[in-house]
Image (cartoon, rainbow, N blue to C red):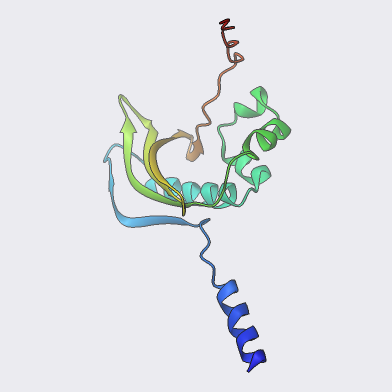
Length: 149
């Protein structure tokens, strides 16, 4: 009986839900101006799969190439390590950026056991390849004002 309970306990511990997968509904709304949509869906799925697993050396390759000149791979890894990666990513729709069909705004839902939120994830087509747009400023953040009481 104890062995049975131990096996049952191990089974349920192994069945814990993981929030690191990516869902893309095949019937999502896609702006007709976006080209090479299947490549965008594939790159999106691959990017979020490796990013959500913390494989930043792989996700760095999906970022727009300019990031290589602005920030090092080590900076990218260090910056992203602080993120919690216990979420499920869902593609909701794809729209073109106003006046530019080579830029796609992918509405994305992030779900975790603790919260759910949505944002527009930007992707840029360079040649035939879609790259994730990593929002980054060249300038450092301004200093906080000193408040004296």
